[in-house]
Image (cartoon, rainbow, N blue to C red; front, side):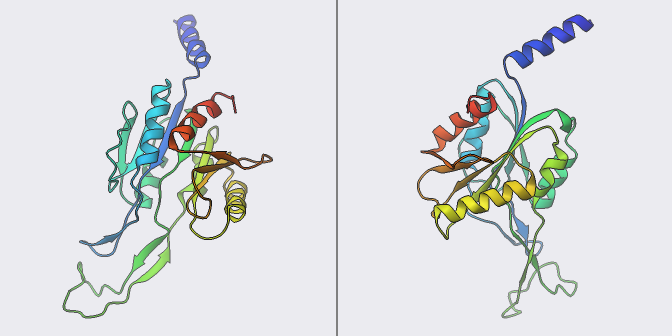
Length: 226
């Protein structure tokens, strides 16, 4: 039995099969018990990435924001939905065999802020209340927890920026890598321009033309061919 198990393990490693987590789509944060704030992320790119990695033979779990609007299918990856930042963090923390995860692609567009308002016991803001002041308070950053949760994994973060230049975005990506202990950061948005940039420590920023090319890069990168 031991010999057979060892053989299966060698075959799995030989073909590069890896347990991978992909996060994608938006989170949301509640305003009251009937309203919420979210963002424009659709989950399309992350769904395609999860599907590509699964099709390459990896065991992929795609954590997808429940409010994602994309029709892009992540199958054959397993899809698990999440709602808020805290919900995603809890699901990742309670994931079994976290030490076996080989890679995490954290592409989810998580909320930067939570909502605070003086509830005074209310479950719903009354439309008769007139003007209501809501306060935005910073929310927790899941990416700061990933290295501790997945100590053996290659971790890729994302930076979506609208203001500044490609140089500015690259600097923010390098800062994210240094602060979070990740292995790479993907940058995009109007500050970067068309396509994506890949930032890795001690390497020049590499340009990737589109989502299809980014998915191909991820497969090659995990295989050590980048």
